[in-house]
Image (cartoon, rainbow, N blue to C red; front, side, top):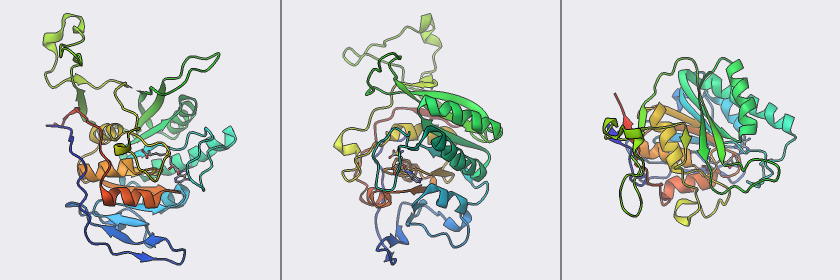
Length: 315
Ligand SMILES: C[S@@+](CC[C@H](N)C(=O)[O-])C[C@H]1O[C@@H](n2cnc3c(N)ncnc32)[C@H](O)[C@@H]1O
């Protein structure tokens, strides 16, 4: 049993063996990270060429629908997907976040079907999106035989009220498994105390004495995920939104062990991969516009991880 790690990532960047292809893109780079023995050929089809590899994982530059079909059947333990939400946001030049609704849903179903295919039996799939989309995507996944586990509400603080509606204040994190879950580790969160006086905030209906001293069982409402705003947590070359490492800590600790494989088709700023490096998980991913920024993040190892006091029960 262990407190979830609070250390900053410790990617050692040593030897670089890169070459440039005709497009000027750097390919075939290998960053040395600590004590990993990741063998890409165990997970992707022969001839698949990543943008770069580390001792824990590999990133493919480009469309996830080109990358996913290269992944072998049933080799992944956990998929985490945080796609564009179709809100008209500007990510990079190649990304289109303004599709007609029906096209967006058809597109999501295509990459989701690939994600289901690559999952091992019992593997876990997390999809982070607006409730409006996750309702449809969750139904699709259940029709495909996935087992519903949770709709996790991740509270967001920065949203604005909308006239004629309730004030939206959460995103949905769907959690499903491919049949009976192969792994599920209970996470405990600290018993809440007052920031000023240090006293406990709740009396737990008179049952305080019965609480586990390691903390409270994690709920399906996460109100403690910080936004990524401060420069020390954020890539200075990729301004688009990034998730907190704390959210990925939970997903990864809850459903995997060291050397298990985590796949993220929408790498963004590389949060999932940075957490995998830190926690000694293997990883696979793709990113349409920011592969270079992800490589830089892992190489420089200079972005902070959010403080996380979760306790992970490994039995
Ligand atoms: C919401 S962001 C992911 C943020 C990421 N979770 C993080 O913490 O940094 C979505 C990302 O998907 C990328 N993207 C959009 N369409 C894509 C596609 N077809 N294939 C791969 N990546 C894509 C965008 O460039 C963007 O960086």
